[in-house]
Image (cartoon, rainbow, N blue to C red):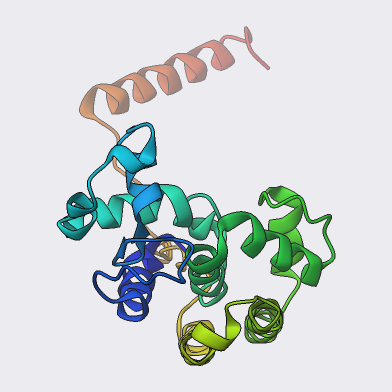
Length: 222
């Protein structure tokens, strides 16, 4: 849902936190969820390790939001997904990649998991209750995370994150309208009087009526 990006981003950033550089994290130096490699790619720096880690540490909030919007929210078609589902798919994409997030969603709704959201996926999503879909997606996400070799190190944090996502996404699905209601058209006032004719039109009408009467009296018109 288009209007839900900022709220979803705020929730994602609350889970991501600030700058970290954990030796067991394959993402390496990360700040506000943006990895060293992602930032280098965004700035078109190659090879990515030539970008100093200090740039990751000093990344601005505006650049963070721009990256999340372009590389994650737009990639999973967040504007087109129902409230709650959009956030759940978005957060999963940030944590584990857009392809996996979308493919898992597609498996649930019965669409070929090609990792790209198109009309068929959106149509299938619309057939689902949003709360049930959020629950199913978060369940598959947890199953995936538990299979990772780094679960023993990061499992507690991941579990807390998915639980939080599940709770907020369900709340969004329940409390936010799926689509903005179209503004109602004002009803026409009953028995609205017609606009009176202009003086010229009225005079022309009288002239035609007189002419018709004359021609009829002369037997020219029936």
